[in-house]
Every structure is written in structure tokens, then in C-alpha cells.
Length: 560
Ligand code: TEU
Image 1 (tube, protein in one colour):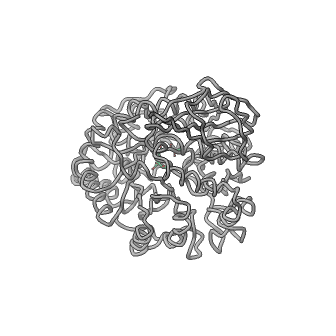
Image 2 (image 1 turned 45 degrees about the vertical axis):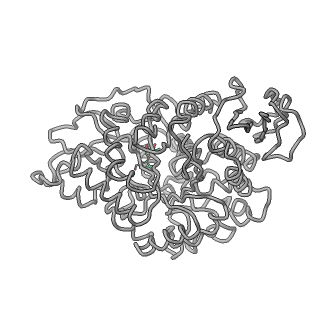
Image 3 (image 1 turned 60 degrees about the horizontal axis):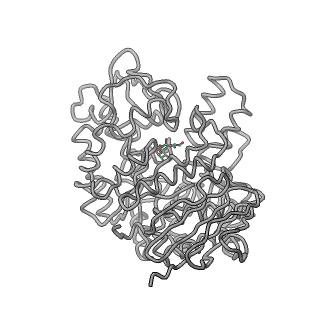
């Protein structure tokens, strides 16, 4: 397998709005991020992924870009960005920018120009359809129709996300050229990596046929499978690679919902020269009911393990993935599949172990490293996310469901669970800033915060540092082959990684039960590298696992 710096890297995701407010306006900013770079360096991460910082009216908090060449006012200036970029580089870290290619804001100059029916230069930048009714039955990911009528344009436009995020038309040559030069602009400024937002949606089917109301691919809106991975999408990535990526010493990670491992391999197979790695959704969708992500069904470890194993084996030696259980779109995993009260620390460490030891590049989402948890606001007024607010409105006001019932769904799945301010210390507003933040702080900040975690050697934070250190020390963690162990076990996820004469054993208990498991006899005595409970001396044939216990062993097989 080809060895590269980004395969060895650990990536830390910052949601800038909620990381650190340096200027007292209640909103996180670039200077605030700069203040915390030493913390990130000490954590040991290699790459900092900045959520979108471009000019934006913030309907979807930066994922609706109105100018790709300017910084959002609340976050600071281009000088602040340049300073942040060089401070990141000074510390030997790299910077990844979130690039939004599928849509812009409706306030972008291109969209405004495209409204004029006769504007030949810009009309085709978006999907405008004239007529008396919506062109088809597609629904937006954020609820409601994916089409909106515009009086001035005298036509409907397509928006797969919010009404303020019109989809761009990637079959239009001029638009593609614009986007490639925008990407080069940022790379020329010193950016080292791109996270490409929702990019398997770039190609829309030529015919605008209706979607089936009940589609099996329930991780997507009812038009999802018609759109995801559309015909011709690989040509676009090959062109993008040729025009942009191949010209810089950079790496790409593509965020793609509704992608199978087979498709994931096509996107990331290095021989095909498209994308370097992918963030897929399949494992995060295991608790989606038939009605979609808001309908939560119990977590099935077996289903989860099958998905992870399928991806690990399919891409081995050819493609690459981003490893994650948390991000700004997902509820906090400690609350979702762990126990955020009795076993908060144990389960946070267990999930981290499970993810960091797989093949791929691990992503840490801000606050994950201190075991931050979900939020429960009583009133919908306290929520900020467009998807959550649309869901509440549609379910309560249109479908007539009760407030209590809808809030239960929101407590489980709202994206705001992950977007509350970063908890730095136990002072007012958790040290995020000096005034009331744009979204409330989680009330557990006196217990869960960075300052406390730094002072406690048994904290989740110190455990993350250890995991990262192990990765730098043992190549088997990055490059070793994966094979599953105890595949039929319903509570334990265990696997082996092998490289040359080294074998790594990873054992994680996803339950609150005490269990005894038999991993079989390894070739030689393994040594315990890390565990989230005080070490116990037992053979691998009879391991006693406590609630959410995680262990990592290394064995050396002497070949001579
Ligand atoms: O998310 C893309 C995506 O697939 C979403 O539908 C995701 O599944 C959803 O947010 C889960 O509820 C990206 C960004 O990560 C997200 O924050 C943006 O809102 C979205 O694109 C539009 O840019």
C-alpha cells in the first residue's frame, strides 16, 4: 500500500461558530481558534478541519455560501484567516477547508443574476424550471418540497437542502471552471486539504422523474437514490483531480451519504485518480427507522460491525476512509449509543478505541475528546439548526403531532446536540466567551470541560492523547490489514490488524454487561498497549470485560 502523510494523520474538526468567541459577540471566530492552537497541538492532531468560514447569511451556518472569496463577518477577516493558517503551519499542523460545491446561498451573486430569465451567462448555473407546477415530487433533505417558485425568475429552482441553498448545475462548463479556480485560490493560499461537502449529489439525473414515496434507501430524502452517485459523476471527479488536486501536495476527503462500499472504492481507488478518501454514512444510519433519520430504532451492534467490516475489507490496499462517530451533523455518540451518565468516561474511551484502531484516518469532532454529550432544551425556541426547526414545524404544525413527541425525536437526533459551545472551563459560558452565546451551553459544563480533563490523568482527553501517540508509534495501526474477530457476538466488537510480524488485537464491549470472551490463542504473548480500565492479567482466551471496556494488545510473531 502506498504510504502518505494523510493516511497517518489524525484530523480535528472545528465547528467555528461554537469553538471559541474571542471578541464578545457570542459567536466563535478565527481569532478564537488561533488562541487554542497549542491545545490542539498538545492533543497531537495533525490536520485541522475548519467548518465553512466563507461569507454567508447563515441559514445553514456557513453551508450556504454567498461569497467563496470572503470570510464571514462574524468570524473575522481574510487577515485573520491568513494569520490562523500560518500559525497552524508554524506548529507543524495542516489546514483542511470545507468546500461547498453542490449549492450556494440564494444570496450569492450568481443566483441573483440567474433569476433574470434572459441572462444567458448565469441562468444555467442553477436548475431553473418554468411551468405551472413543481417539476417533480422530490423532497428536500431538510423537509418539504425540493423546488421553490421565484416570482422574479418566473420559474422553480431546485434546492436539495434549505430553500436558501439552491443547487448548482455541474453539467454547465462555465460553472465547473469557476469552481476549479475557486479551489485553486484557496490552495494557493496554503490550504493542505479539502473536505468536499455532499459531493456525490453533484450530478442530477437528466430526466426529472418522480421519486418513489417509500424508498429503501432511507438515509436519503425521497429523491435521494435518484440523485446520489449520478451517471457521469466519476468524470467530474477525474476532471477536478486533473484541474485542481493533482497540482498540489494536498489530500481530499469527500462527504457522501448514500454510498455503498463498492461505490466508495470507485471514488477513492488511487488508480482512478478521483478522490483520496471518503466519509461515508452507512454505519451512522444503523439506527434510522424506515421513515428516515428522525425515526430512531435500537442500535444493532451486529449491523454496525457488518458495515464496518464490509468497508474495511472492500477498500483494503486500494482506497481510504475517514473514521468517525461524531461530527456537526450527528448527535454525540456517548449519548447516542453509550451511557452519558453512569459510563460517560468509559463509553467515550471505548468508542474512541474502536474507531482509532481501524484502517483509515480518524476524525475527532470538537468536544468529543472530553466526552461532551447531547443537549435537551425544553423549548424549540432554543434550537438553531434549520433542519431541526423545519422538522418541528412540519411535524407539529402540519402533521399535528404533539410537542412532547416531536421533542423526543429532536433530543435523539437534532444536529444541535453537537453544536453547543465547546466547554473549556467551569467559568461562565464554559469559557467559550464572555457573553451569552448564539446557542446555549450544555449545563454539564462544570463537570465536563477541558480544564478539568487536563488536570485528570484518567480523563477522556488523556486517553485520546494516548491513542494518537500509539498511532505515531505503531505502523500496524495505520497500514495493517483488518480482519474481524467474534463476528457473531452481539455485544463485543473485536478485530485484528496485521502488518509484517506485528498483530494488534482490539476488543471493545459495546454493552453495560460484564462478559467473558475468548479471542483464541495468539502466536506469542501479547502486551497490553492501552485499556480504559485498570489492567487485569488474563489470557486472551478468557478475557473478562467490564461495561464498555476497551483493550488494545500488540503481539510480535517471531518469524525467524
Ligand atoms: O451534509 C450533507 C448531508 O448529507 C446531510 O444531509 C446530512 O445527512 C444531514 O445534515 C444530516 O441531518 C452536509 C453538511 O455536513 C451539513 O452540515 C450541511 O447542512 C449539508 O451538507 C448542506 O450543505
